[in-house]
Image (cartoon, rainbow over all chains, first blue to last red; front, side, top):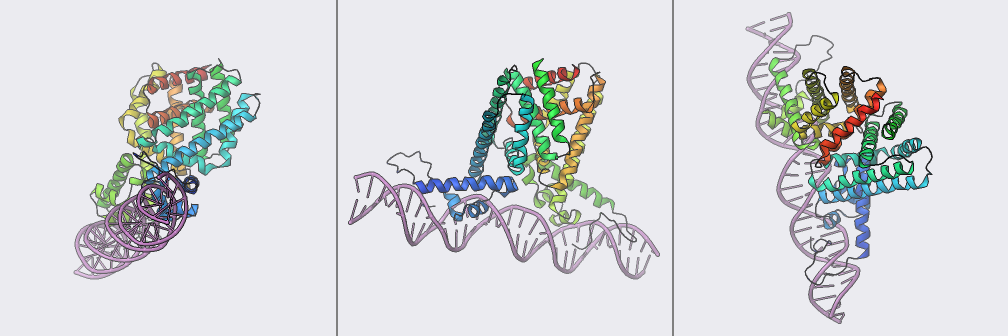
Length: 203
Length: 203
DNA sequence: ACAAAAACGGTACGCTCGTCCCACTTTAGT
DNA sequence: ACTAAAGTGGGACGAGCGTACCGTTTTTGT
C-alpha cells in the first residue's frame, strides 16, 4: 500500500479525495451488502467483494484497512437502508387500522428479500461478540423503536417508552421467527400476536 | 478414510461400535459445543475441535462426514441441553409469582454463559439458510413453547397455543436484545415487559 | 511545469481451512 | 486362530483467505 487510507486526520496539507475513488468505495460497500444478503457473513470476502464490484482485489485493502471495517460499514449501510425503507412505507400509508398496517408493512419488508434480512440479523448477533458493531446494532434498535413510536402515536395508542419497547420487541421476535423457521401459516399467527400486543398496550 | 462412517444402516452383519469410539465422538461434540460458545460459528473448525478434545485431526473426519454435520450435531446437543437446563430450573421452584419466576429463571440462564447463548442464536439464525438445521431450530422453539406452557398453566394463566406463542416470542425477543446489546438497566425493563405480557394474556 | 500526494492494480506471501490418503493397530465374529 | 471390520493417526493436497509489497498512473496544489 503506497498511499495511506483516505480517511484522513491529517496534520498538514491534505488533498481532498477524488470523486471516482468515493464512487468506488461506495461500490465496494454495495457489493458487500449484496453478498451479505446472498451468503451471509462468511460470504463477504475481499475477493468476492472486489469481483462483484468489478474492482481489482488490492482496492479493497486500499479503501478499507481491514475486512472487519468493510463488514462494519456494510452493516451500518444495511441498517440505515432498512430503517429508511420502513420509514418510507410508513409515510405512504394513511393511519387507518394500525394493526393491519403494521402487519402488512412488515410482511412486505419481510417477503421482499429474505436473504438481506437474514444477513442483517446475522450481523446484529455478531455485535454481541464484537464491540465495534455494538453501536450500529443499537442504532438499529433505536431506529426501529422510533418507527414503532410514530406508528403508535399516529394511531392514537399510548406510546411511552415502555409501550414502544414492548411492541417493538414483540414484533422483532415474530420477525425473526418468521424469517428463520418459515412455518406455514406463521404469518397469520403473527398478525394475531400483533393484535394481541396492541390490545395489551391500549388497556 | 478407511472404514465407513460408524452410523450404519447396514445391509448385512454390522459390528457394534466400540465404546471408546463413542466416548471420543462425544468428546468431539463436546469440544465443538465449547468452541461454539467461545468464538461462535466460525470458531468450530476441524483442527480446533480436535485439539480441544485431545484427539488427532483425522478423527474428526472419521466420525463426521463433514464439518456441517459436526456443527449440526453440536447445535442439536446445545438445544437439548439448553432446554433441559430450563426444565430443571422450572421443576425446582414452586409456583409462586410466575412473573418473578420467569424473569429470574431467565436471568440466571442468561448471565451464566453469554457465549453459549450467543452461539445458540447464531446457529438458530444459520438455520434460515441451511435447511439441515431447520428441524433443530424448530425443536428449540417447540421445546421453549412447552416450557412456557407448563409455566403458565402452573401459575393458573390461560395457556392456549396463542397465549403461549405470544409470551414465548416476547421473551425470546427480550432475551436476544439483552444478549446482544447489553444495555444498562435492560434487565429491569425486561422484567417490566414480561409483567405486561402476562397481564395481556390474563385479561 | 513539476513534485508530491493519492489512486491504482498485478502479484505474491503466509496462513488456515476442509478433506482425503494410506499405512497401521485394535477389536470382534466365526 | 484367523480375518475382516472398525478404529487410528500422521501427513499432505489444493483451495481460499486477509493482507502486504511495490511499481505505475493520475490528480492536484503551487
